[in-house]
Length: 217
Ligand code: B16
Ligand code: MG
Image 1 (cartoon, helix red, strand yellow):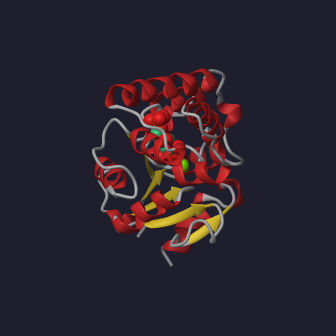
Image 2 (cartoon, rainbow, N blue to C red; image 1 turned 90 degrees about the vertical axis):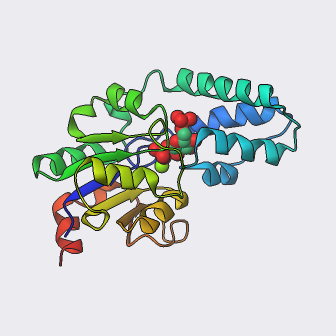
């Protein structure tokens, strides 16, 4: 019985992936390399530090611990500059309406995002009040594909994992949901999000009512 929704943020509610891409590309270029769309796809849902490890590996740069820490700070500063103007208008198609409908229906709602900037983005979008719990990169030790972020989300809204439906746009996030024992809607294609129970290109293609009916058949 589905009674709660656990939402990823970037790529499900808001398209901040494009800003992460620009900031990582700047970072890769600083290291003497470049950064492709395909590489960005691999970083979706992956924590900032784990992402930087991959960027360093891809560029084959040699970076000591101090430089690594400085790059983490710098990448985030670039990202923060880019998200300055984010507002409700940047919601992905149908996402805000979907959240409002779920909230009005009494479905428990939690955020399960790898991003340490998630609370700030939700505030900028004016969506914080729709969430019963917010679990972000500051609250977890293990990043996706580890299920920690979603297990904590389910616990925070007082539900068992099997009572929760996760909405994810990254393969790491889909794996986290399935390992955690949750059902999962992939926002993307079955080719890139193998393992999700259902796929849509955006939340606007369905409704909370339709999904709850489908999973609770
Ligand atoms: P930050 P999500 C993830 O957010 C992004 O998909 C990923 O690209 C990013 O590196 C990660 O958050 C960490 O973000 O640097 O803001 O802490 O998709 O899990 O909502
Ligand atoms: Mg995401």
